[in-house]
Image 1 (cartoon, rainbow, N blue to C red):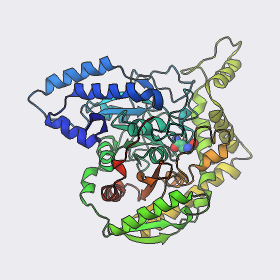
Image 2: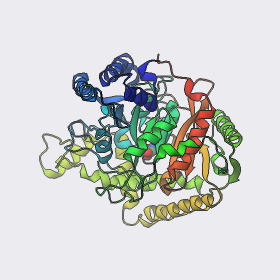
Image 3: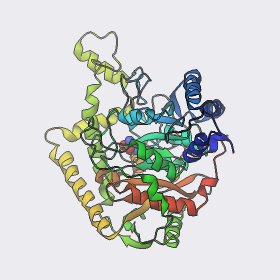
Image 4: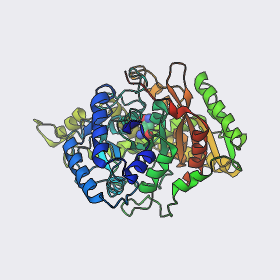
Length: 489
Ligand code: GLN
């Protein structure tokens, strides 16, 4: 099998055995990128082949006769372009940060780099991670490898497309309201949003700080466990990262069944707006989980219908505050030829931000303004608590919840770009777990008649990533979805 088709685990095994060298890995992936990147446009910035080959040669020399490797050694990874990389452009898909080269690595990047992986490049995203399609990127959209006329999902669309198109073996994404899970579903790959606090946010450019999490986008559930092992854990540089021991997540995959697990199906996730093909694929997946030994019960998460409204008040409020720092003074774009300071602020922001980011800043500023604060922000905070309560109650009865990820398969480029509300509704099944902080994974569970992937979401108790990984892995091994790969045309 071609090198680029292998999963992270398979590639790692070959590398550890000495069947493949670091230089061969770099060459194979660089070749793959020259073949398909023109059609997929997954990357904003790519590392140069020469730099990576030089590193690869040194690595191969040093490894001669001593093949003790770390799980990510020589693994070709991609990083979403809102995660800071020392010395490498980090644009956030925005003109505002079009020239921004961070002087430090995000903690997740420090962790993967310390295992001597290759960072192949920085992947495309909706500007400041605000969007569900990558169409809000200032650098143009990425394409869905299954059908390049369709969106790859968003905002981590570049990362998901790169994994699906074999342009990297695995990637880091970020998820605020669904941005890891939804593109993973659109592109037929695995995406895991860890529990809020499980992974350090240090060096992740803030969108909505109480919701943002970094997580893996991979070809298999095992690969997600391997990557999570590396990035999870307390970080003194992020006060919201939690100081709990990190288990070996790959161990959770030993049980290849769902016996003695209660699996909840929330009624509110199967209502109007759910595409019949997605509905059917998800219901068949639930049936398969039953075959695998799971006890299936129906549950209710009554506040589900208000999750989107709650999310879009809180996320925009936090964004309006976080994005206040881009004023042309310290870093980021500064407009030239302005006559005074105020005009410099205004014109820099006018020129630097795209329309969706401006819309969110205005919405958020409004929700926080005096006179409206209690009615919007205060109310949304109260509802967030109730949404969290829904999950606490459901998890008294069940071990995991299973739902669709996105109401439809990936839509066409341009289809929703002029209708923000329709775009926001793509997140109707993912924002709840973001608001509650619970971990959730998206795995492939079928295809639409037109050949586009469909995703299954498995949500777990806080800090019980092991359980969702176990269920996801059992399902993945019992089905053959992964054997169908996209043909890029
Ligand atoms: N699509 C959602 C939004 O636009 C979620 C984005 C995200 O998770 N970063 O806010």
